[in-house]
Amino acid sequence: KMEGVLLALSQHKNIEVKLFNPYRFRKYRAMDMILDLKRINRRMHNKSFIADNQVALIGGRNMTNQYYNVSDSYQFSDVDVMLVGAAVDDIVNSFDDYWNHEYAYSVQSIVSAQQHRLRYESLKQQLDAHYQQATVQNFLDLTSRSHAFDKWLDSNIKFDWVKAEVVKDSPDKIRSKAKKEEHLNFQLINHLEKPESNVDLISAYFIPEKQGAKILSTLAKEGVEVRVLTNSFKANDVAVVHAFYGKYRKELLKNGVQLYEFLPTPDKRDLNKNTDELATKAKVNMKGLSRSSLHTKLMALDEQVFIGSFNFDPRSAYLNTEIGVILDSPSLAKTIHHTMDENLNKYAYKLKLDPDNHIYWQQETPKGPIIYKKEPEMKWWQKAGMKLLSWLPLEGFM
Image 1 (cartoon, rainbow, N blue to C red):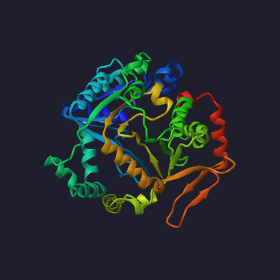
Image 2: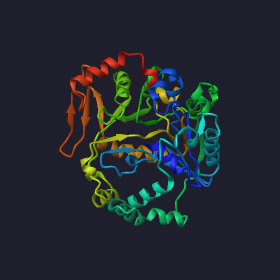
Image 3: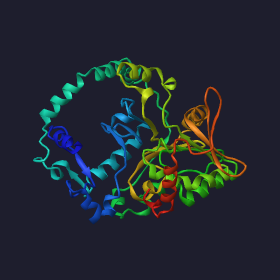
Image 4: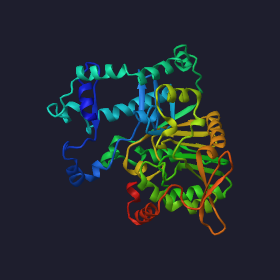
């Protein structure tokens, strides 16, 4: 189990591991769900990677193979932003707030060493053996030929110097004690300017609720081009989310919002050269992936960009803790708008309404468009299940 690995890692003199908001009953976690559901239902969803308090990465990416094109079964598409300067201090301070919070426990105080007998030296031997595998060596060989790391060492990475505002939830949100101004969604609303021309929103899990749907619809009616990209049913790794997102599609489309749903499998022809080479040499069968899923969380409004861990759904807004950054960057916003212009039809279904106000899905292919009058790759019983779920009072937990 991962907690055994974390316990072993913590035995290294330079490694310290804490668990935030852990289960009290390690072996019988159902007990926590019964006795302490309000707390357990809330999660630290923040993602940040900080080096020497000087450079920080934030976005939606987790630390596992599925996020780095080295899994042969499932891939998540994600976006991060690298930050230097004053914004890094805010991210460091946020990390420290969580690290020093009363809900952060050292792994040694939570995980039983008697139940997990893996020790650091044994783990190191396993890692050494893994390191020698051909797939790992091929991957390292490929990455060593990338010029990106050389540019980094030579300080040739080009930074776009812009105003950056870090927005983040207080760790007290986990126990429902954070003040209104300590919520990311409150900060997001206060720091974003009203768009006049473009809104491009990408969210892996998209449940706008009535208020969000109204805001997007109003913008579209006022002449703002509003585009939303989220997962299709097959691409969504949390199917229940799709049931509640589906309730808002027709309303949004009627009001002029453009909806796109991410295709569930990548096309090997669209992989960049390095990824294609990795797929071949490291024996990662990208073409045979069972599923690919969108995991990105970003929004570009005219000349402002938000990137972070925050999904546009009730769970991120009210339950989980999140972090992100708002960038006043016309060049980055333009790049995002242009990238979506070029790639939406390649990687997503476009949703439209027919004359009878029924939704259909249009997929662009080299041989021409394919029209789906029923939801792509959804069985009748799945459709019925989604409909039943959408009637339950569970939207606030999604």
